Length: 219
Ligand SMILES: [Zn+2]
Ligand SMILES: [Zn+2]
Image (cartoon, rainbow, N blue to C red; front, side, top):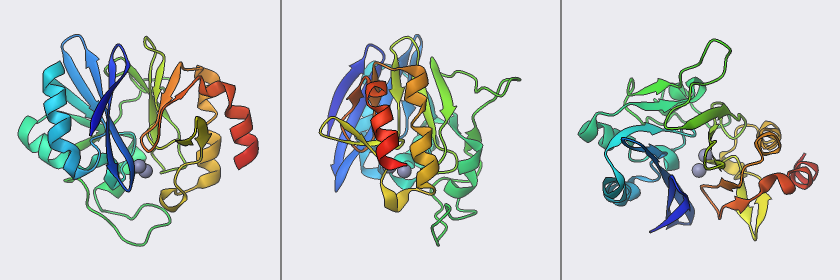
């Protein structure tokens, strides 16, 4: 496993399990937040890296798939921190309903420990850890990306994969609605981040410069 510094406030922890698997640490004034917790085997390394940077304040999830929520139960058992995800994925990760397109339910988190991301009156999500959550459905119904305005980094979760410096679609086998997922990629056009950080691939700089090509190719 290795740790990369994405920007002044964001670190990415990468592991390999058939493909690249990542989670992020985001520093705030009084501690740190995790964005995703990777596969279960990544938990100890993530926590030891996190400890060096500050005390854990909470966990934000990009979505509810098993390779992103692996450490959640044990971390919450030990640290009792809040965990947030988009409302639409919570019933799936709690094992109450299978993800769309899948046959089996999977109880990945203890029911009740993940709370829905809070919305403000105008329907926009409340900022947490200097990150703005943005709903980007398709890969899963409640997939969100987190935008760090100050660092201009978009933590993209599974919105994209990447290959040789190019944006690629999310992994088909695990994607609920590919058409919707590809369209959700437009968000980089609006935000124009310095870089999009990707779970299953290398990060892509100035992704807005290639998003039109991506949309044309995959829609
Ligand atoms: Zn996924
Ligand atoms: Zn994934």
